[in-house]
Image 1 (cartoon, rainbow, N blue to C red):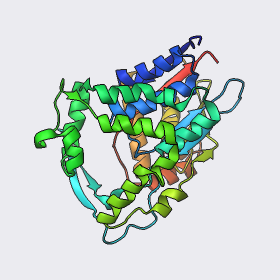
Image 2 (cartoon, helix red, strand yellow; image 1 turned 180 degrees about the vertical axis):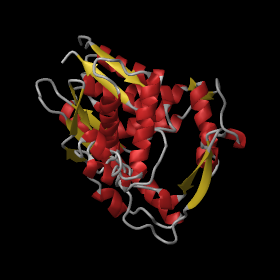
Image 3 (cartoon, one colour; image 1 turned 90 degrees about the vertical axis):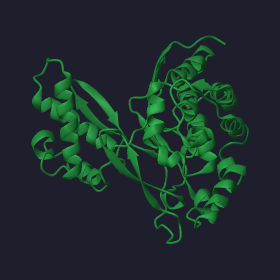
Image 4 (cartoon, rainbow, N blue to C red; image 1 turned 90 degrees about the horizontal axis):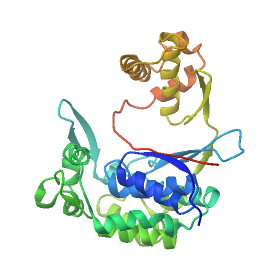
Amino acid sequence: MAKTRGVVAAGHELTAAAAAEILEDGGNAFDAALAGALMAFVAEAVFASPGGGGFLMARRAGDDRAALIDFFVETPLKRRADAAFFPIDADFGPAKQEFHIGQGSSATPGAIPGLFAIHEALCRLPMKRLAEPASRAARAGFPLSAFQAYLLTVIAPILTASPGVARIFAPGGKPMREGEILRNEKLGECLEWVAEDGPRLFVDGDVGRAIVAEQVSGGRHLGHDVLARYRVVLRDPLYWTHRGAVVALNPPPAASGALIAFGLAYLDATVRAGVAVDALELRSAMAAMNRARETHGEELSPRLAGGLLAAELREAGRHASAYRGTTHVSVIDAE
């Protein structure tokens, strides 16, 4: 099959390489993005997981507008009183942040239903081919980078709370260190299963049944009915104009798009047109975004964005401030 010309950006070299491999094999940008996401489950395990969720902003060749595919996790409306739910401290070095873990912190995973919805709508290579790089890396293992090793130390209390997780990421009770080989053969096997069986594996298949069984032992926070009820949602993006470019952003109920638009509006108001934005100005914009979130945007949005973002920023402000990380895969092809 002819190679596809394209560009990939990702949070780990293995993630980028998986996407590039699929472009080399003739896949389109969406095929490559899915291969990258699957590899992120392996190489960026703190940030991405088949038990997690995400979003895809997609624009096909010839389309004037983009589409936002929302496959984020879905939290049950009410946590059962008997579900395990307790705090731990994530140690970032200069600061600590409280997280809650246990079955009561679980949410319905959207990643696998989302990736299959994307595959059906936008991709052209078989899912089995897209999963091959990630499955191969999970089985073979790879050396932990300094950054990945640091992330394991940050969430060490999470990794050591469960014997099964500790065996993978913290053998002997301590997180793995830089240069050590991280191997997760069962994850590689799981990715092969899901490529064959589809999203039902996470509902009434082996993985779905395992999720429910684990929940029963800790308070039955997630049941089979919750897993079966999950739906991927198609949303219209939030559009914002910055320096002549139209940017498509994640709309509410997600907070990120409105906050990014606010940051761009801040830069428009504080940096002269035609002048490049420097690192200090970008830092100032990011600090303003954090303040806008904490104050529901009421103090800053009318002055900087003509009030256009007021409703979106109020929606963003409904959610508690969080500085947890995530990862991204971005792909452009010749189409």
